[in-house]
Each structure stands twice: as C-alpha cells, then as structure tokens.
Image (cartoon, rainbow, N blue to C red; front, side):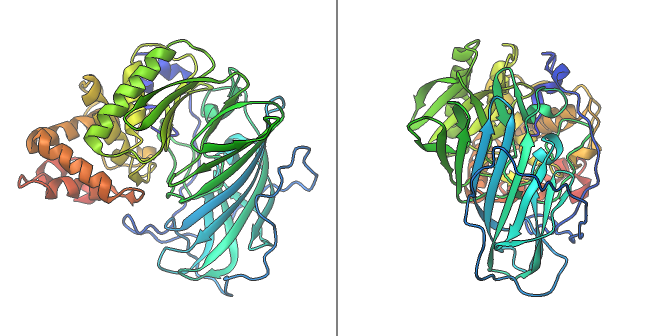
Amino acid sequence: MRAHVGPWALLPVGLAALLVLTLVGPALACDRRYDEGMGAALVSSGSRVDAEPTAAEPTAAEPAAAATTAIEPGSVNRTSVNLGATYSVVLSLRYGSRAFNVNSTATITNTSGGPIDRVELNLVPARLGSLTLRAVEVDGRAVPRRVSDQTVIVPLGGILPAGATAKVRVQYKSTLRTTIGGSSWLFTKANGIVSAYRWIPWVSRATPFDRPNFGDPFVTPVSSLVKLTVQTDRRLGIASTADRVSISTDGLTQIFEARNVRDVSITAAPDMRSRSVLVGSTRVRYYYRSSTNAALILDAAADAFRAMQSRLGPYPYPSYKVVQSAGGFGMESPGLTWIPYGVSRANLRYLVAHETAHQWFYGLVGNDQARQPFVDEAMADFVARDLTGTRRASRCSTGLLDRTIYSYSSACYYEIIYIQGGNLLNQVRLKMGSTLFWKTLREYVAARRYLLVSTPTLLKTLDDATPIDLSRTFRPRFPRFY
C-alpha cells in the first residue's frame, strides 16, 4: 500500500496513531494511453534555486553537455506518462547531518505515440526534504527550474517527437526529516534508520501529494534499468530496491542496479543486519536493526511469497527483500517491502502478506495509485486476507469503489477500498469458482507485466473469463465505468 500508509493503518492494532497526514494541492492532468485519456495542462510554478555550493555535492551521474539534441522548435502543450526511461543516479548520503543530495540523469525516449514538450518527474523530497534544485538540464542545456507540489516540471525547450530521445538531468540537495509523523516516514532518519521513498526524479503524471487519508499519491511506469551509486560519510548497511553489484574497499561507495522497476527505495543504517531463507530459486531476506520479531517476519514473508507465487505466477527479481524501515507504515517497492521499526506482533502476518501481494499488484501490474486505487489495494488486500484467513466485514457503509484517493474520508478509505473491495473480489471468486478465478489472475498478471492498467481492464478481464455476467456485480460499485 503506498504512500502507503499501509492498509493496516485502520486496524485495531493501534498503528494508525503513528500517522496524522496533512493534505493540499490541485491535481495536474496529463495524457494517459493506458486509461481514459486526459488532456494535458501546462503547469507553471515558482521554484527554489540556490546558487551557493553544496558541501557534499555528488559527482555527476552523466557528463553534462551534449553536442546534439533531438528537440525540435515549437510547443504542443503535451506530456505523457507513457515514456521509456532509464536512470543513472549518484546519491551523496551524510548519515550524521542527514544531508541527502542527488545527481540524476534520465535518458527518456518518447514512446507515447505523439510529440511532447515537457516531462513531469515525481519527487517526494519536494514536499518532505526542503528541496533545493541545483541544476535542471535537457541535453546539456539549462532549462527553467520549476517545482509544483511533489512534481518537478521540466520544459524540454521545444518538441520531442515520438520515438526520439533526450537526456534530462536533475541535481538537488535535501535534508532527511527526523520524525515519522504525518508523511515524514517516507523521507526520514529515525530510530537510527534512513528511509527514503520516491527520491529519484521519476517520469510520472503530476499528482497532488496531500490527501484526506493514507492513499498513495503516485503513478510511475517501469524503467528497464536504474544504475545507482551511493556515496556515504561512514560505512552503512544498505537495503534497496536495487541490488548491490560492488562496494569500495573503504565501504563508502556502493553501486547498485535494478531492472524493470517502478521506483527505487533505500534504507540504511550503520548496524543493519540480515537473515534469509531460500524459497524455490528466490532468496527471501529480512534486513533489520532490532531483532524483535525477526524470525516471525522472515517466516511470514517466506510463507506469503511461496503462496502468492503459486497463485499469481512467477516472480521476476532475484531476491525478495523485507526491510525494517524507520517507522510509520508498511510500504512496498518492486522486490522490496518496508515493515516499520517497532511494529507489534498483532496482525504482523497479515501486514507482511499484504505488502508481499503488492509485488504482483503494483510491482508487476501497475496502475494510477492515486486515481484508481482499487486496482492494487483491493487486489492486494483480497489476496492477503485469503491467504491469512482474516477476511472480515467492513466497518463503514457500502461505498463506491471507482473513486480517487482524494474522495474518501480518513475513516472509511481503508474500509471501502481495502475491505469492501477485497470482499467484492471474493464474491467474484465464489461466482467464477476458485480454479478459474486464480487461473484468470495468473493470466492477467502475465499479459500485463510491467504495464500500467486501469480499473476497467481488471473488471473486463474477470468478466470475459466466465459466462456469468459479472457486470451486474460491478455496475453498482463502479458507475464511473459503466
């Protein structure tokens, strides 16, 4: 569950007291081929610029300056989330001072099918890290520095035709927070652990960060390759979505790579330890500072992973990492799950199962988590509760399942999207029969791996798989799509 203040936040475990979210910000639209297409609005916003040198400035991820460019003169007032991008990133992390400085170059290919003249990059430190942009360049040329909410808007200085490629470099400095309240747990150093989420400027659709609940305000396409260099001021144990490929002899520079991921989170501590177990051909590993519940968490992760791979199909990454984060809520990244520091044993197996289910629904089959949360949250919660035998009735009155995260109250978002959504999917399973239902989900995952899908795609997939008319079940709960 993303921006996750996890689905378990409203359970009687008392974990909800950990987060009090603060919310604001208008939605910014852009074109989406995977959903019901929307016109793009030109975004203009002031940005913060600091001309002073940074003490711990990361070295350039790519040489700045390019002799040629595919950018053509003109404007089309259009962007898209349907862009192919790879990322080369250098992070300078100062554990002592909490300085978190980034130099990132995205090589972006316009796979949207039409011309674009700007890109929108998601960046949580814009809201949580006192962000200061140091440089924004397109093909080596400086462009205006603009930040709107959690989005860095990069005008390309002209038109990037369909099929063409440009390099977008963003260099920024920021500071990790020191608490886990509100949404701070997404970008903080607390309980001796650095936890950073959505910190690489990533191709996205401009999306408001503030919301009246704990929904995840993100939508990101898969990147085929992310190369990450982490430079630190002391030896740190690092758990990341990306896998480590090398480390310097002094332990202060570590290099990571990730393939086919929607984001790259990072968690670090000087005394980070790990234990693991092999499940089939996949190494399931738990990273932690405090060993409290370590055996239980690893066992729960292995059990959930084994069951879900059997039901939902192959897992594509070489390992599955479960990581003790600084605190807050459970959260997922492709190949990695955060379990908060200090979480109690109550509902722990459910929490791990829910986050593990997100490896398939959000990790492999992506969606607009802010505007269509049913696709991943209801699916993940249904699978987790089916596995753990914890299905229950909702504590809120029956609600619509086709709304954005901005439309549900704090009290009933979880109860409607997670609980009612999961219960609806269970009704569908009973109507279809378990064998056909799980077969359909495996085929759904296989056919849409690494894509972004919409709620109608999921509903149609289920309806088309059976002679039973499921539209009668769906129509009252999804009037937006029927």
